[in-house]
Length: 201
Length: 143
Image 1 (cartoon, each protein chain N blue to C red):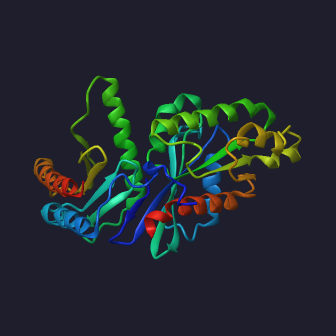
Image 2: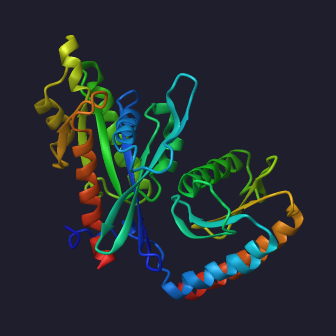
């Protein structure tokens, strides 16, 4: 539910980073924030616990300039990944225009990725949205851990687990080093804007 | 891409044209800013800013404020349901210099007012109630 202001020629679109707990959603936003520090005028907002886990959401507004004469403001959100925070996760999803699903590439997280994606599908359904229709990009995060000898799932396995039906763009990434973080964001912004362009015409 | 995207809930659930937005902003300016309120925001429940009006001296990060305000409202609303209330009607945060007042306009919209010591809560609630009624009548015409 992007908000298009015909008067001030402004579009506000909401993109949510979803995925299992400790998967790197907040790290994605932190990297974007540090990388585009000079372009992002306001501070990143994080509501987290003492243990640094996201409690409610992170929020990062990002002006991407003009598209078709409209000033586009992208609002990046993350959700808390832990299973027990499902109620707050659902609240953050309200009015979402585009999604990034951040999967954890570690072998031992395989099941958690699948469960979290299923949870996303259920929560979108509560807002009468289909996971097959909402603009979505997958990110297989933590590829950097391979160097440290931690067993990772091959991207083919992740594709099979998560993307065999969805068939959406996917990126192997490392949020810590920043690898493919910006391409992931660019992709979801372009998919989201494409889905909104009917409104802007 | 856009054409086969038929999930219309993704798009706006409401449409306001320029005239209606101007009407809303003039209500916010006349009823609230002129009464001494520092800043007033009309936001939707997803955290988007629909209309804003301030006294020209307001330096707050309003986009973050709107995101937090809608989340805060949703959280408090859920708390109300847990204790068996339909909703909590007064939502107000008091600070030393700035206060924030939340008022539900309808199912989709919230009115957020930021005001200082010079405006009493009672007067503010009265003014907000009047403004909400007028804003709602604009929505009625839009529907």
